[in-house]
Amino acid sequence: MDQLKETLKGHHLRTTTCREDVLSTFITKKNALSHGDLEGALGENYDRVTIYRTLKTFLEKGIIHKVLDDEGLRYALCSHNCSEEQHQHDHIHFKCNACGETNCLENLSIPAVQLPAGYKPQNFNLLIQGTCPKCN
Amino acid sequence: MDQLKETLKGHHLRTTTCREDVLSTFITKKNALSHGDLEGALGENYDRVTIYRTLKTFLEKGIIHKVLDDEGLRYALCSHNCSEEQHQHDHIHFKCNACGETNCLENLSIPAVQLPAGYKPQNFNLLIQGTCPKCN
DNA sequence: AAATATTTTGCAACGCGGTTGCATGTAAGT
DNA sequence: ACTTACATGCAACCGCGTTGCAAAATATTT
Ligand SMILES: [Mn+2]
Ligand SMILES: [Mn+2]
Ligand SMILES: [Zn+2]
Ligand SMILES: [Zn+2]
Image: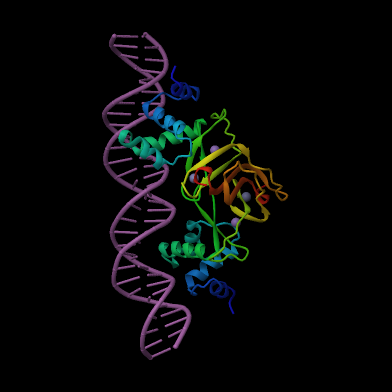
């Protein structure tokens, strides 16, 4: 059975060509993608709105996660077993100021910080900007 | 001499009532503010565009810095001696999911991380979301 | 294989955040 | 006071993202 269809089924989603193409794009390009990137990659095939809705659905079902950025949101594949119930993303994101790519550093977890009394942390987002190995 | 005027002069900016009011709003409310927050606070006094331009100018001159957010950008006062030449912001930002406020934790610097070979880091942005002391 | 129920898509329209051009108004230096 | 450089308001515009609704596609049942 097709790998893409299997992933979609695994997250309780109907297989549609748009979903397959969006998922496939995330897999082949490995960096974080904005809606505009996808629109560029998938061209005239799908309506803008459909891509927005696909991203929203993928977010909810735990297929992708948001990546914070100082200019516009991006999305990246969830590597591990995220689902509708649990998203876990304490890894670092790196944005290259030269090529503009943003990537997940899946192996690097965000270091713990000692917050002042009264703060109850739940989510962590660490974005490091600089130059990536390719542009070095 | 007025404190506000002095700050503006110090960053080589002309004193205008809009700039004074925006700066004053940042000082009295202590949390990070969005453009919308300022529009709400300053009401009918100024055009939206003027507020946008004031924020842009303050950013460039080192009076405020951007604060990352999972939904829309915010801005906060630069505490130390930022200028046109140097912005230094390695402190942590905390966003409360209850009251919605985002604050600078100026005393908490972002812990160093060991990046893989080839990555040259320049900027760090750490956003922690959770519950703040007030909403605890 | 056909019929049905349910979800997904495309289209049009809209709202919001942010930018630009240009004429007018204002601050600062002389 | 006069001049110059900068700041503001207004109008128009663009891009991102959302919503409502009818048509199309998918999954399920017969
Ligand atoms: Mn990631
Ligand atoms: Mn800050
Ligand atoms: Zn790069
Ligand atoms: Zn709070």
